[in-house]
Image (cartoon, rainbow, N blue to C red; front, side, top):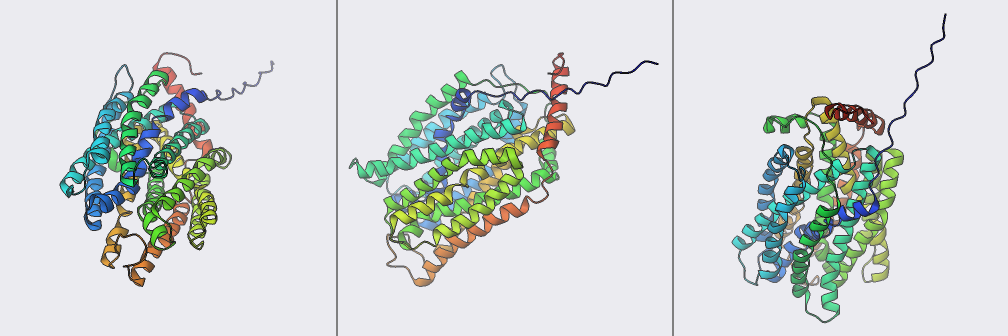
Length: 465
């Protein structure tokens, strides 16, 4: 009788780690895209209402209509990306396509517009801008998903993505303040310079990413039955929980951004420049906090990390808004602290949806990453649409978009405070609750990736790593 040697336990392959230089080049595209991200919900509605001269209700209606139209673009763009095969990759050609569209839209919306422009001008160019923005953001998110397929490395990639998003937000918010403080011009000139900065940065950052960053190819059957696939994804618990969390986390900061200048101007007694600085400090807090949330996600899992961030955001945000006005230093400090969890919601939901894309490919053999990211993008935009509802509420109670509290009734100012403080705080807390029982854990994803890696290796005629 002979002894049989026990089978050797083969450890899983070490995750492929992209260099910091590659991730920086990839994430540089976030700089101009993030500028749009803050301009669309924050800068442009207030700019068109105050400086262009459109009524507040008209601005809200146009933005809501265009965003609702734009939401229908996303699933078709995602489906088309999933079907794309070229020697340049699946997602990079779409990013190239988005660049000239966004450059033209930025010029028209920020630079060419003049006081007295009507709602047709706003509607037409906002629609073009949103089309380019959808193509650009979805192509970059899809590219990120294949750049690092492993659970923890994917958190790292999306963490870099979010850090550069916040840097882009900070840089674009600084511009109007620099223009005003340096005596170059007024706030309107600062917004126009924002547009020129975007036009210049887009081709530079996209070109750098195309030259430096590879796009790995994944195997998987071609997507089919786009409408049916779109509906079927909503049956998955992972997808539903992510979409609800993302929706709540999209509405909350959207309301904050759309009402920030009104709240700090008419309730706290700060001028336009000071309010802009508070927003800037809030995002700097998010930039400083991003590495912590990326680290925490590797320790407790992305779902728990996101839930902790949601609860932390609710408590810190409400606390910051209750600080008395006319104290710039104190308000700046609490806004920085309130911003520390900001980054987590954006990059962790994207990384988690990319993980869900792996699960979908594992179960069906079909790569629907682009479609799934487009669904997540759609919920974010729905959140931005709903974030404009407070504009309609304020108009209904007689609120006027004028500097200082004079000219507004006490009831309209109370309504402004409730919308700015209570509603976002509740939504942030609810985002943590909807993630309870999230099924796609780190261990489950590792098992899925091992099977997918074996399939990919077999499909390419090579032994798995």
